[in-house]
Image (cartoon, rainbow, N blue to C red; front, side, top):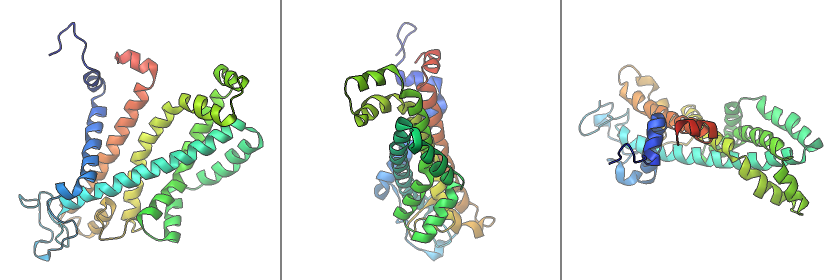
Length: 288
């Protein structure tokens, strides 16, 4: 037990400083566990139909009730976490990889390439909302999880590229970069070994918040019928199926909506906490 003279562990000090981040971390761990161990955690087969118990309210046999086809909602939410976590992580990883690649090249070399990339390419992508680009690509390629991921990556990488470009522009003329060049380091080595490690803080924060955006975008696309095709469980698909029973069986809308809300909130809380923690002034003020 910690006394007045014994410093608290780091995790306890972090929890006291930002309890919302602690709650977000717990929720993310819960969703990841549901995604990984879905076959063992779900009480029923998420695709099992039983029309005799359709639209059943929450009970001791079906904690979250059943949908219009008699499928267990809790099991479908647990399996839906697989789709949300997979799509979110793949979209962020793909967008981050493209953003770091093009943003670092544009910021480091500057000149005509930077002007073309910043004025033409970035503005062309930013002139359309990302979700509309994703809808257009999925409508062209057809529904499916990998087509959905590709569409969301195409619509979301520009934000990371612009952030990386701005950070590289601020760092490329610093003394340690000039020293690396003077020692004969190649451009690739300067970017990878000297520039990128010094600009990762805002990129990590953007990636954490981007997870929330990717999960919400997946739910939106699935709600519009452009996500994972049935009978695969997806939170957005569940919301779409529940529209016609909003008033007579609201539980089939409430629980998938709560799952989306908690997932988005969790990653937003973590992103805000990372932004504060990676800022040395905020960290010193909090005593972390």
